[in-house]
Image (cartoon, rainbow, N blue to C red; front, top):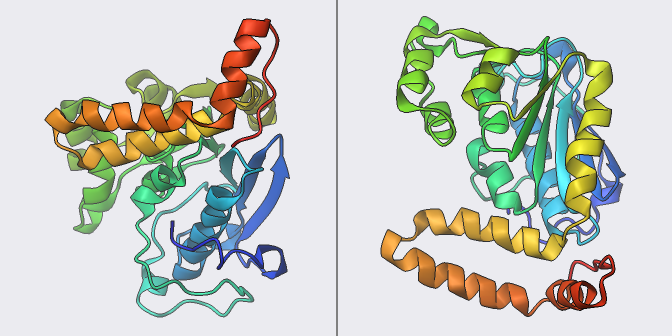
Length: 275
């Protein structure tokens, strides 16, 4: 991750300018809190998000992350003015990192389940967050726009993420035309995993249908599985099964695996320790 375990030791002493955080049901809940700028991704906001995800990655008592947003726009994409050095003053105390932060890799590198809570429109670079997560739950008010070509740009990184879940022709059409799709359309093509009618339903849906079922399973096994999913992308096809066998051998040595096997034999629910 972008910050080491040593760098996040004083996590609770830091001040976030654009994020709100809470821990519930073993999940770190993060809210983008820059509504006055439509939650546009400024360097400070990106750094804060990388710091929070690094914390979640290193903390054993955090088994996953939920990302939502405040305001009537979930994320307007990259803050181009701030990227050019015109970022407003803020009170963030999050330290810089020497590592390059790649938005489309943030949630993949977390190696823990990630859930997007989307109640409002998403534009351009906001897709890098939604598209890299494992679950994306939207409401009927959520809309998804790729307007880059209308500004003389192209959603290169977004296109790559979309191709992981959507057919090539649908992705190309979306990118080339700069279209806006409804939440229902995104559910039908696989960009959203789940759809609820209103924001008042979304938290209960996420808790009951994703978080609690995930919490029934071994967090150590899930983390290793997601690590394997991440790392095997860089491995040649003929080496993948060898790599996955090694990952299984590592997984079966965990205390969670031993507890899971023992609980199965004893016909009881396992008690997970994430070890």
